[in-house]
Image (cartoon, rainbow, N blue to C red):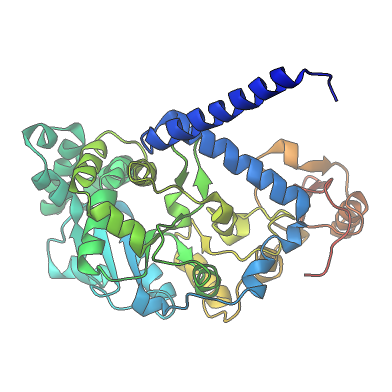
Length: 431
């Protein structure tokens, strides 16, 4: 111990207490979306995650979901309201999504889910292609705003799209929809969420989905049955920096009934969201920055359950191996959507990240694929490997008999070890 005089120690303690009081009071009086407050929350969350990681084995991180009783049971179709966002250029995906999730996640259109888009169907044939009504919520934004809003460049693009649709110029309409669809998509979140809440105000949970998103019912139900919908929950795949951490829209966004109630009790915040959507690049980020004003923050503890990739492109790491996986993204063809629905759509037990290795193992020779080669730091490659079996052996030797993912390129005679976490653990433990 340092030999500090008693009087000095007393002053230091008093100063520390005053400092803590000052920081606490400052934190309380700062607005919920203050950069200082967000930075403090960000660093506190990272510190908490580091402690959990250091004190809990990866395979035990989500053991509480299996061991603790589900205190908040709910019916998926009756108690969950879904918002599906689509666009003119991608509207063909909606029937595939409805067929894939209609028997498990989605209930009845208008009562349990709504579909919103950036166009109005012009004839009966066009409507039949979708199978359900599509609400043109961009029209709502345009009518909601003042003259300055209606002159915005995004509305001009929207009007050009409408003109091409009315004129029956499918080629031009598709070109416009695909080129500016991402801009128009940002406008759909605020009015889409308002339509969802006004249509079904008494749901316990609300989902926001892209038209190429798939939700695993068994995994989602396990997670949400442990969370109280009367608390303000905002869940999803966390992306972005500390000033606006947000749930990636393609991975599915989950909001509790209380979070939605807080939002739509504040018409001033809702109106601001409409206005901000005109210039916001990412609509899913707008959801977060809007909720921040109400003190509702993304809960990153649950972010690892949400996935922003298609099953075959999903990178599986050992720290997620035993965790339930809630969502997939990028299902843009009938084949991909039907396959996911067939393999996990009817699962009665939660689907874990590790299950994807067997469920979606590539049928190509010499491949146990668990994600794209997008980060060279995470992939080790060997050249002149003649056979797939030799590739697997190399991966097993490198990782201590547990090869989580490997790929053999027959033409290039190359072998890749895709195990992102190979240096963390050398032995697979029983789940």
